Length: 286
Image (tube, rainbow, N blue to C red):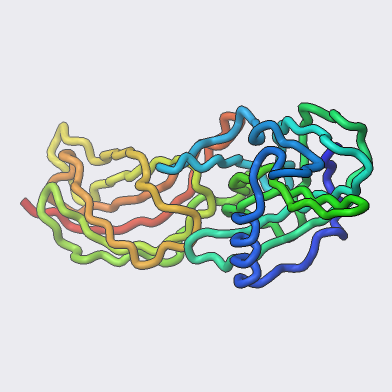
């Protein structure tokens, strides 16, 4: 059985959030890798494999980054245990993320017959369905079978997260201008402000802050100071009214300053994305 991409017309309409929960609960009880109990028609000999998988967070969640409109590709070791049964593959895509409405896209396709023991180690290349947008999705491929005298339980082919990104779109987008807690701060800070933004990818990023002096600095003192550091870990979705308190670099001395911030993200293929965020002005006093 080769899991081929389906035509766009086969993709079903969105289900509601409660249906997603019911599906998840049912699959959690019924599905497992392998032969899924007595009388299995298909055996899955291991989890999906792809060298591009990332293992994120403390739970090491398997995640595949795919550009919008690309294919979800992985290798799967599976085989036919019993012939003479009808077989289907059911693929579901469930969107999730902070501030996102959950919904599921579902596809069910009948598969052609194969002799017992085939096909072995199979390469899967599944098209994304219409309706998949940039963000984080949970992908599941489930097998269903029906024999002449019985209907074995469904079984799990593959399950992992897919982070869909737009190669030409932003990774982090501001939702509003920042709000300064106070416009006059002591040297060294803290500089406190409130941000609202949306993160469209969970990819590792860096913050580049550029401090530009708006008042003349003493001779020999730089009037531009750079600070670059990794972003703090926040998931895909909208993050509103986030309070930031930062220490000012030692080169930011007394006077008026402008801080401009950009987010820099490395993308597959050696590309980088630079997303301007905001500029704020403040005064530093000794």
